[in-house]
Length: 607
Image 1 (tube, helix red, strand yellow):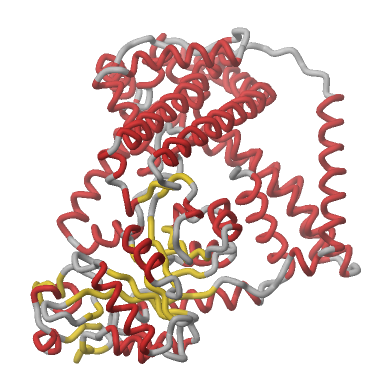
Image 2: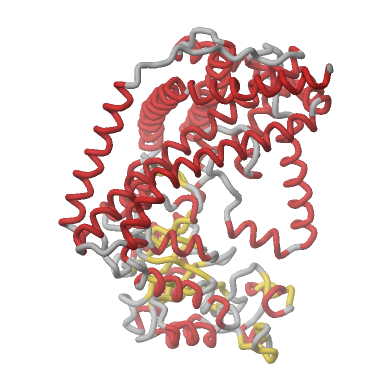
């Protein structure tokens, strides 16, 4: 009888729980809009101040190519302090206040955004200790890195750059260490999931909060895992179900029923806009619902009882109906305008070119003439190579600091003569005999009239002398319009721009802040994470071209081929060419959906 009563009580509790969640939608959206608005204002204000600090040091931006500035000047120290302050404000408003707000909603208290924002800010004081620092480190950097746990929007997209991951994967010891670290951090996201709740709601500090959170999890681990799985599944089914019900049927009719072309385009545009906005709306609810669920479980485990979800007064539906109808009318008007201007808004042809990484990517031996020629035969627009200086002053093409990986010789180019390097062969699985190590002169001659050549000044010998010598070789061959000198050393790019303005230059960076588009160069080479739509637009407005590196997986290639970037650098050249061909031949309904998706998410919701 006792078990039956418990099951009956549980059945009563579950509908109340999820009714409370969905009844809270107006409050959640109000909170999200207020939070995003305030954080956007804070980001704008702090950003303007950061730019002033950079300008006072004679800089327009700080990037990976001149990061020493941060630790060698008082402006750099102030810039770092400003960044840390921004993180603390984001944690206060984007996390602490969200937990307090969820607590109010779930316990029936009168919710007040500004009161909770103040409480969230005061709660930051309990992070000023070792345990609090470790918690913040996990929230800001590690949770986004492992893709699990509570994080803040400022660093939610943080990840290890692809070129660093390639280095880690190439060394078994480092890769094993990284895998162990990843698993430990992933598990820590579960074990210490209630740490911030203990700090913010339980008013504990640092290590004590971590210990208490760990104890709560271990005592209730199976129930926690079950509850979070069921919660995620229910939310997913609800969002997918509503989406299919509201948009799926209409899209099927629009694409199967016979109709005039203008009506087909209008309906596809209209349903695509509504569907994408619905996705954006759903995305805004994922984190608040996750926080609400963990807050509910925190109360259950810490107080040994379930929350008695408040019964909320039914809201007057008239305003919601008016807003929905107004939204549908706005979508219809926008769809009509886009239908009239269809050809200019939805172009079939791509403007983004493909550049083969390290000569010919995976088409041939790395950084060799053979690889470059194979890429040229496939029709790529450009080829990127890396040059280093030998002990006797020649320039050879090699990426790493030594020839160990590519040719089985652990010596550095700068410690070898040209004759010694001529004895090496660059190994390739498709070519057991290997290919000779190329010189810069050979690569220039091979690319002439075939592809644009991007020459990266690489390694310890990348200096003014290398720049001077490379410029001379390019000018001697009349290739100033067919070769670009690129580097991760901004000082070197500035030197070329100042002394050889007729030579095209490119600056490579995987992280930057400030007016990056104002840096002195012709091309900006951005790592995937840095190549945001806003950054691409700013660069184009300032007369610069954007290269995105190194784009290897198919999803990323599709994304950046559609991003408006001028070129993508990739190892998988054939795959990129095939993806580009598929994009240009896609059905009109897919063209509409993809174009609008990128426009709305990248150009509007990313602001």
